[in-house]
Image (tube, rainbow, N blue to C red; front, side, top):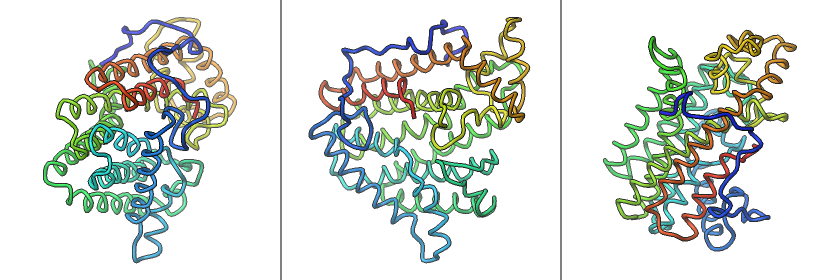
Length: 357
């Protein structure tokens, strides 16, 4: 794990990417994301994502209107579809039209959506993706049961993918739950809080992103060494993606992913910049440490804490960790054949560092 001592301060605006390793077109090829190239690959991905979206809608439907409404609530609110996109992209290294690819991509996205319903209950969140969370609209019981419903639908689809896929998904789900438990109880005595935090991200986010890439490659019939490389890539880029989400929660003026800026501060969630601050003893940062030692609910103190974090070296150090994970993910691509797929995966590594929403 990357610890506090493995990074060196650097201005967040100075984070650079290797211009030779990727190219972001001036106009995105599609609505999928600015990291995809133009041409046949972007068109194939757009077509695949449309099939995923149709399958997701079908999977959330129920003969009971209220269940359909609650199960489709977060789906209708949008989302980047990061996991199915990665599955579809990994499948380009084999047969992207294999029928199992879309099914596997849907399984991963349904699993992700189900965890969001449960997360919002645990976090007592009122907003998700710019819309009222299910728990704030219908109560905790309905939100929890809706998450369970989506898990059930994912399992039903998964059963047709074979026993090995069921085993992989079960182990992924074990890591998701373990990560949530570790986050809930916090770092144990003698455990470095930064290593604990990064381990939680690997379990809660990296594991499912890794499985998305693994499923896409394996069900497309890609070579075993490619499946292994893309699984490792998925874990690293998944952690990077979550790190960027955490930093956007501090940096965004508008609020990233439908959240108000500084939501983690309000809820007392110590993300990486806060952990760096709490571990420091610089007298000049005493006020910041005082503010972020617990939930920051007072509006004036919340604004002060955000301003101090935004101008701090702790944010810069956290940006370095994000860039490090992105580069670790890029290094996993050495076994991927040169061409549009590898270029797109490399561009994704840059995107997670530079994204603004």
